[in-house]
Amino acid sequence: MTTQTEGVLYLVGTPLGNMGDITFRAVETLKNADLIAAEDTRQTRKLLSRFEIKKPLISYHEHNKQSRESEIIRRLHEGQNIALVSDAGMPGISDPGSDLVKACIANGIEISVIPGPAALLTGLVASGIETKEFVFGGFFPRQSKDRNNLLNELAAERRTMIFYESPHRLCATLQDMLSCWGEDRLCCVARELTKVYEEYKRGTLQEVLKYYKEKGVKGEVTLIIEGYKKAEQKIELDQAVGILREKMKSGQEKKAAIKEIVVKYNLSRKELYKSIIESEKNEVL
Image (tube, rainbow, N blue to C red; front, top):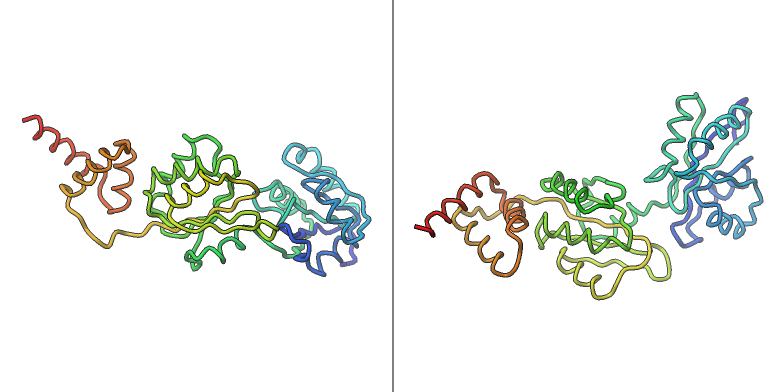
């Protein structure tokens, strides 16, 4: 490690599940650190024990990050080298490590990254969905209303989208996606990556939702969804009204069906509503 007056914060990537994925450099960094800060000390102790690393260990997580931050900054100013690790993968991605990085930058402390696995990239490259351009959205909102607001904002997003999701909420999230974006959007659920029960489930939103409703969901989930594709087939508004009626006959709610048609066929929501009203008036007459 670099010899200097102040210490260095090392962001150390750790395995997602398979211990064989750790790098020589990561092991060396952990062995030479003065202190290791971990999101979950119980999980990190297993890793340290596996590689016979005996170093002081403290917790750094969402619930104690403010109090720990000042302690870690102080230790770094005193010349200690500190390694930051998350539960699995790269620290700083959808975890409080990003806040510590900002604090270190503000305090003029050097940061060094020891690259390692990341679930979002591991899931993406095996998904079969476009990898040229993509966006990562972290974890979905817990509440359905907030999720739907986000999904409506992303309805016309053309890049591949990647999210993390709790196994307990996966089916509800897939259902919200199906309602907002239509049943034909391709997706991939990457589950338990690099572990014994690793699984990639690929298909349309409808197919994947049906699969997990029947099978159930366990383990860590990365969700990859294809971006919006402009409809190649242009349809007239009266055709769209006909499609809407068919969807409503099959039991789909009117509002959800309109959302799906607008996105799928790249139509103006305002114009479609206008055509629906005119059609309903003609039926009355």
